[in-house]
Image (cartoon, rainbow, N blue to C red; front, side, top):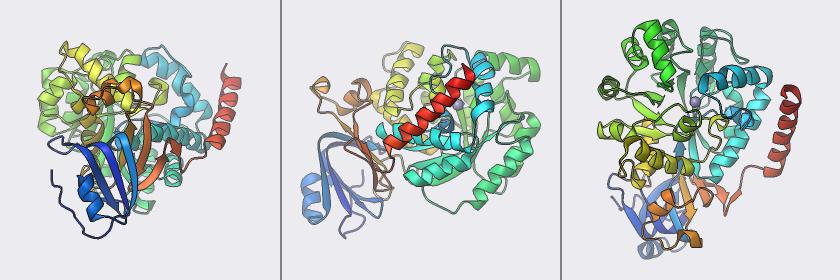
Length: 447
Ligand SMILES: [Zn+2]
């Protein structure tokens, strides 16, 4: 990798780390090295001795037993429904959605509900190393408010449905609200947008075309639940005479800016349509396992050159928003699905949760790896515990070694949002009080 210094001036912060997994094109792993940060950007990645000589007066942090990785990017979720974590479990997707989640959302979802849900999600995500998340949920202005108060990076893809919700009534209303949200938002490097036509079974052809029309001037990415279950494919064949991927391809919805979330039921034609269009897949292994949706053949997609990012989906279908756990499950599930022990290696799992997710969301020029010129979105994982010893490979320890609660420090664009395990921008006590009030309210009215 290029270890040249972009600027010879002093750094705002030097982070010394035992190991640094840069996730650059060569998967460079550095030992006893440092990252220098200035104005929120990475200005040098180099050997610790050289860094000390070049930036003698900079403030420094020493992470002596840690692996520093790029901030993790949760490329699919619904943070606004985190208050429904554990509300309904052990059910197939359609029953879970139709008989439990959608009625609960109708009863309770409001801007206040979404804001508290979002704060709860951000607390959990930051404590487990996530610095950026893609989010499809109602009342995105409430999520945005929580984002701005916290300093986490967000890619908002508000949903479009054919049917009404507490947020909007008709497809045109969803689209107008999204366009208004985007155009009224003061440009900010921490927040980006796209459209979230929910799924082929909740969005008609006319509505997909209306999304494309609304997006003509904006040219943003589309974020869609696609091929989540076998039932979705069967129903699509019965109703449209084609598989959902082919239907979206024919409508012009699949492009290199489209994020196809789940993709558990795939045949060779589906793969060739993804290859042809350059669309990305967002893999959600824990959600797929919990809802018994099926397995995404990640190794086949990667072999076909398709970009595969990683996401948690919502806390209601996972039930964690922990990207380290998600990486572990991605590596493990791929081996079961393919019956190949080398399917999705530790380094591939880390790439999926960082640079691949960044590429999928159109953010790779700014985040996803530890390289000069990128924003300083970083996550430090403490590998000092006895159960990680001996550390032959820090990536092996990260992915296979139960590190999901070992994140110590997190920075977003150079701002430290987690310091020695403590959140710097979220008051955990008052958040806990708000969450408990919602739990009492929801329990009383629905049980
Ligand atoms: Zn989802």
